[in-house]
Image (cartoon, rainbow, N blue to C red):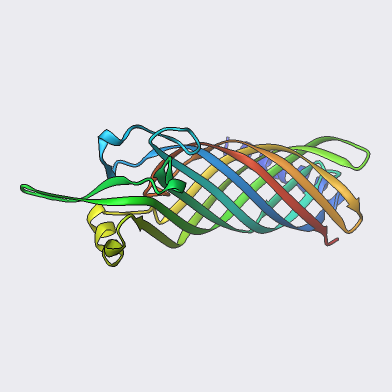
Length: 255
């Protein structure tokens, strides 16, 4: 059985080697920008007074709104083979996860109450107009793209990928109603116990098209299908789910 396995490995290796020998492939350098959004609900860390209303996605006319955005920029070498039907790529991607919470009438000076201290019989609230948070990650994506057909200068493709990122920085800002509370921002944040995951990891798929502008430049557009978040607490402000969005790219053939 062991000899048979070795023979099978040799046959597969020879077959794959023959494919690459017949098709030398092509390298390109791709620059990408992605914009995504997720369904979100307020994290349990933030003790907003319950009598101010419910929490819903940003833009809904409720008493307190929460929202988010996930934007990324990446640079990745890409290798295509099998007559440009299959592409493998990896590189570096910078991802920003932003979230915010505000009163629906924020523009008119609306505010809500945030409990930041509760010890014994003492309970302290701060009047808050808005809370925002921004976290930056650097990651490495690994992607496999299959292009079954093309039409004139258009390639149509499906992609699967995974990404692992590491936190670079995170900042939480509180806009208080009372100017005298500004100096206590860090104290309030410490009491709330803000914590953001040091890792960012997803698996995802997309469908898209690439247009060949010339022999030296291609542009692409793809729709990101619902993304599975493998890590939690990538925002201390909101819980993220059902992430989707779009991505744009420019590719420069190198060979």
